[in-house]
Every structure is written in structure tokens, then in C-alpha cells.
Image 1: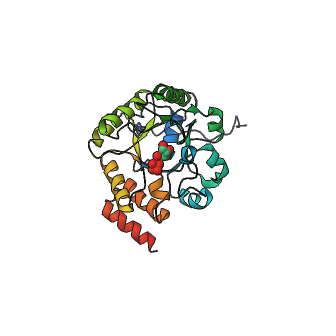
Image 2: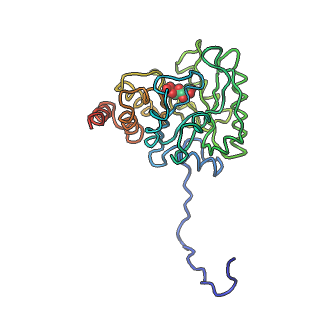
Length: 292
Ligand code: R5P
């Protein structure tokens, strides 16, 4: 208990020194609650404003995906290089060491697999996400899916309610169905719908034509998925083009963990995302890491 008498007089009031009224570093996030901003600041590096999220949630629809057969062997050694990890609660509990001290974007919706009909999903429980110390909730949002668009937007809306209630950001994950095209028109619509429904940030895909319009039309930060495995240099170019067009990071899986040298690849991706390293130079960095 504080003493009532004999205390040193308070005198360091900094009279004449302005208080720091700086805004928040992420687009569209200035009016969010302290807890949401604090978690976003763990996911996104406040210096660069960007993030390298390592995604390894693929098994929840695809089973033992190439590169993820033994996540204890392939993924755990990569975690130290990521700014954030994106995974299911199953892999978190069974494989990821709780000592890794990385923010978790928790895959928060599930319900069907590639064997049946994708996107027929429900949400996991918020209490478990809190117990797991999730820094973001990540539901799939299937805009344009004739069967599950409404269901997945409802899932997103529920997550946004949780964001308001518990201060955990919502990452809207735009799905790409068999009949949906990855062009600026579609991606612009899908990301905007996620943001309008309250997503704190949105994950989508890069497109060659008009990606800067997708970013401009989305009032919250966008991160891009890597998609199917590309040659390393092409994947670095993809990341560079996305960041140059305004994306605030990558949420990348296969192009890292299916690389010939995943550690070298994640280091090169980080250089692109945080330092704006050009693709040629980043590929050189990749090669020099491989030859170490
Ligand atoms: C897709 O929704 C999956 O959940 C992955 O997290 C996402 O596609 C990123 O992984 P990749 O870079 O392999 O596409």
C-alpha cells in the first residue's frame, strides 16, 4: 500500500512540452480501441508499417499439404523469422511452441474441405481464441459464392462483433471459388465488402492489372496471399509488386514452406516487405542465404 506521508513532491510535469498526439500508423485504424491497436502493432511492424505473416493453415481444407506433412520439422524452424503466424487452433496446440512469442492470426472458420463444397463454414468459439491469446480472428469470406456468400459474411460480422467486444482484430480472408476470377473488379469488390462489414484488415490476392485500385478502394490495410508455388524469383517479384502498389504485407504460405530453402526464402521476403528490396536483389539475398 502506498505511504500517506513522507513522499517526494511530484514536480516533473513537463510544462511547455507538447503531449504526443500522433495518429495510428495503419490506414483506417485511427479510431479503433487501444487493445485492437496494440494487437495490430504486434502483427504489423510499426517502423515499416508492414508484415510478413507465415500462413500454414492449409491443412484445414487440404489435409497434409506438401511442405506441411510434419509441421514440427518444416514450420517450427521458420516461425522465428515471421512477424505473425496464421494457423488453426489444432496446429497451434499440437505443434507451435507457446514460447515462440509471435502474434497469432487464428484461422477462425471451418466446415468443409476440398473433397466437398468449400466455404460452408461456421466460426470457432471466441473463448478459445481468447485462451489461445489470438491477435486476430481470420474467417473466410466467400463473396460471390452463390451458396455461401451470405453465410460467410454473417461469420465475418460475428467476428467484427467480437473485435468490438474483446479488442481482437478481424482479418477478412477473401476466398476465391472455382467460378470467381482474380481480377481487380472482383478483388476490389470483395475486399471493400469485407472492410465495409468491419474487417480490421483484409487478406486477398494480387492481380497484375489494377491492384493499386483494389488497395485504394479498401479503407483498411490489405495483405496478400502468395498462392500456388512459383519459382522463388517470381514469388519475390509478386511480393514486391504488391507492396509497391500499397499492400501492407504478405500472408504467405506455399511460396515459403514449399521453397527449396524456406529459411532463405522468408528472409528474402522480409527484405522486400520491410525494406522495399527490389526482386533481383532479394533473389540474390535468397541465393546467398542458400549458399551459406
Ligand atoms: C487460404 O485461405 C489459406 O488459408 C492460406 O492461408 C492462404 O492462401 C495463404 O497461403 P498461400 O500463400 O499458400 O496461398
